[in-house]
Each structure stands twice: as C-alpha cells, then as structure tokens.
Image (spheres, rainbow, N blue to C red):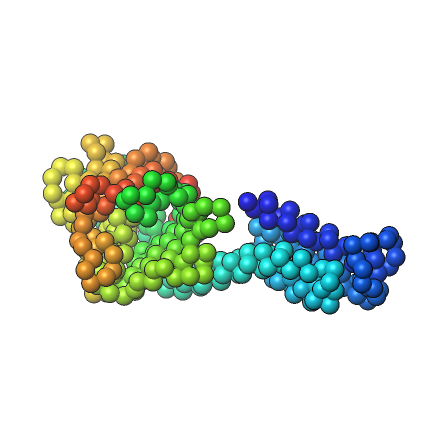
Length: 363
C-alpha cells in the first residue's frame, strides 16, 4: 500500500509537468485549453519538484515528508483553482495526499510528545553510579531468586539504571478476535526512580493502524491509545486501578533487567523452591506478583491479580506472562519470547505475543 501511494504522488507530480510544457511551448498539449503564462508555468514546475521531493521523502521514511507534501498540495490546488476547467480532477489526488499527510503529521506529533516524556523520565534518573551487584546484595532474597540472578549472569555485573528495548509482536483487542495484528514496540525503563514508557504501533489493516503509549511515572500510570495517531480511544490515567496495573507491569518486566529486583522498593518472600512473591511499593502505589522459575533458575512465569481496565467496575483478574527462549545481552541472560494472558471466567484470553529483538543497558 505504501508503494501505491508513492506512485500516486509520482504520477500526480508529472501531471504538473504539462502546465510547464504548455507555458513554454515545448509541445502542444491539447488537454489544456486555457492559456498559461510563463510565470504560471514556473509554478507548475515548482509543484512538480515539491511532489517529487515529497515522494522520495515518503518512501525513505523521512519523518517530515508531510511538510513538503503539504506545500505541494497547497500550490497545486491554487493552480487547479486558477485553471479549474482543465485541471479540476487533480483535486481528488490532492485530497488523497492531504489526508495521508494529516495522518503522518499526527503520527509525528504523537512520537514527538512521547519522546519528550522519555526525555523527562530519563532526566530524573542517575547515570553516574557504577555499582556492582554483589553476593552481599542478594543474600537476603529467597533462594530461587538468588539462583535466578546468578544463573542470569547479573551477579558481578554493573547495576542497571536505564534500559531500552525493542519488541515485535502480535496483538488481539478482544477474546473473540481471530486475526492477530502485527505490533512493533519500543520501551524505556529507569530503575533508581522506577518508571517506564512503552510505545507501540499496531497495524490493523492496510492504511489503518493505532498507536499506543503505556506509562508508569512518579508512581502513577497512564494508558493512551490513538487510532491513526489522531483519535483517542483510550486515555486512562492516575486512578488506583491504572496506577497499580502499571506498577505491576513494571515489576514483572524487571526480568529483563534483573539487578533491579534488589531495589529497596521491592520486598520478597519465598513461596516454595521454585517461586517467590514480590511486593513493590512506590510513591503510594503498591502491587504484588508471583515469579516462577524452573529447576535451572530460569524465569518462566509471572502472575498477578490485576484490574482489567481502569473503570469503576473493572474486574480483578489473574494476569499471566509466560516467557521462554533465552538470549544473552551485555553478559546477562534474559527470556526473549512469550505471551501475556488474562485468566477469564470463560477461558484464557492470550492478547499479546512478544519477542524482544534488542536491548541496551545504561546507554
């Protein structure tokens, strides 16, 4: 579909060449019956050039291609109005390009706002500390958690303060949905002041997508979902249920940066030889979850009682993350593939399948 739009812009661009050719008498253009002066011919040429530049920027994924396209559309439409009798049908192509440009602007604006939030989050986290996770720091933890930290390679490594990771995945919005939507996400974490921002783009069908941003910051949560990056369908923030849910998500995702589990805001208690309960409290928000490991000390499951939504009547349901397949990043072994599932009365609802494709620490 992207290439179809590219060729539409290219074809529309070269249609403007006809006005330039007629104005300078390079050829007889019978389709254009109105007289075109040479200054007007130059404007037709400029419109051609702007559309060509916009097409190249678009196919090259340039974030600001919509600015060039908007300038081209405005100039083109002015010329079409001046030469309406011959050029009126070009309005249709201008409307198509304008609509796509508006969506591109909205997407750029959404990403800019999220980037500003990320910058604010990272600015409140120290990057100068150079501590090592030692045996002394983990001796108070349940034995299976100690085994996990040793097995992961985190013991003896530098404490992690900031995290960036990329995910690719598949998502469902409701249990009865059959088709999986393709999703691509980036996520940032800070540890000293626990916070995260998760940004995702989900392709629902050609030319239709939604963007989402889940955030835990200063002990409070916020979930934002926008169709085409334009229209809010979810904007839930700062109530007890959303705050606790995002805190629990942060707690569960520490399995990707294991040194965080010795932080003072997380308390552990042993359940049995393969599982332990973690309770996290930060800025007035508290949540608990159970971490389960295999005999080797690899993390395999996270489960928590979490509110399914942020409304007053949102039910409390078991939320489970299962992960497998392990890779080593920066000397630390982490699970990279898994699923997120709600345990509902009518059966399991697996809504997200994910794979971590890259991760960086303290960068």
